[in-house]
Amino acid sequence: MTIAPPILAGVPGSFARGVFHERHPKLIEQVLAAHPYGPAESAALRELLSESTDGVLKPLVTAADDAAQWSEWGAGLWGRPWGEASFLWAESYFYRRLLEAVGYFGPGAWRGIDPFAPAKAAESAGPAVAEELDALAGSADTPPDNRRAALLLSALWGNQADLGFRLTATPGPRATRLLVDDSEALWASLARARDPLVCVIADNAGRELLPDLVLIDHLLTEEAVARVALHVKPRPYFVSDATMTDVLATLRVLRESTTAEARRIGGRLWEAMRTERLIVRDHQFFCAPLSFHDMPADLAAEFATAAMTVAKGDLNYRRLVGDRHWPPATPFADLTGYFPSPVTALRTLKSDVAVGLTDTQVRDLDATGTSWRTDGAHALIQCSVRG
Image 1 (cartoon, rainbow, N blue to C red):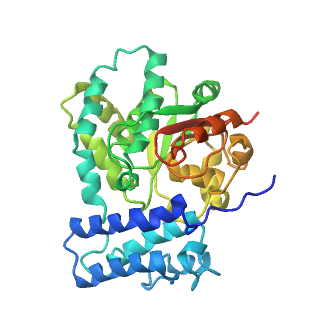
Image 2 (image 1 turned 90 degrees about the vertical axis):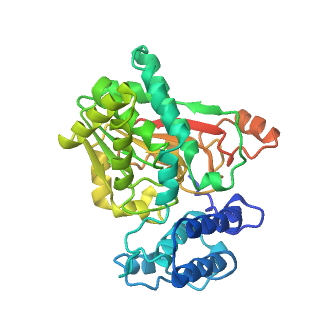
């Protein structure tokens, strides 16, 4: 297969360039408004914004544990314009530099403080989460097939709650459309497995993590899944990406809900963690500027033991198939055959890469004149099962 060229960060008129020139300025202002950072942190954030929009790539300054690794990842890029780097690499590095700017790795009082925590907390306490919890009350008596389909779709469309995406998203209700639905292949694969392990690669915290955890509870209680390994980020990343702190906060939301069904789910998940039927992993690779093709051996070995890996969200999709200008009709299975286990992607479209579509779908979507690849109004459930 011919390897498609990577999506670059700075092509004029591209979605990727818009992230750096439209979304990131709003993000920096949000972070500055959310914390009483001093002059040094504020200046560093504004310097990062200026550098990433009109300057050249510079190595990390602080001697953090990952500095040597980033030096290696950036070999050949230092001193070049940000826009010449791949979008995946440059976006990852922007968030790593943001943490450096606010003292997350430093020796001072800001060490370890999540700059995105206020936004994530507001999301978790918002009306949308309350509505999700209320909806659980009416779902307990739903027929099993209908319930699992509804929970899968809830986890899928919950990905629209990406706080970074919403910085520049058009407000108001949007029509939604599921372009590919391989859910039956997912359920059939799990039904064939004996006492399976399912790996779930999480995306966002708050309003998205809630239906993810509810789906995990369903897998453990109704689908004969033996264990679930939930993979989260080891530190703050891409505004709303989930960390262990966010997992615990969402579990508390469930356990302390006024909705009885939510409390039951929260209690079961709490006990599942105690007995290690639900385990949380936070491998450092999930904050690397790399695709899953480059995952380290220990992470690949863990995925290889899974009957299914479920990759949530847009970023994980980009890492799974490769953030490249693939022809949209390229089969999903052709691009994911390297992955160590069968894999399912649950993804709303919020960036340019898209595969596994038909030529007719692409022609009809292009004819709408909308930004269907990036507006979050379309989604994919794509499953690749070997054999």
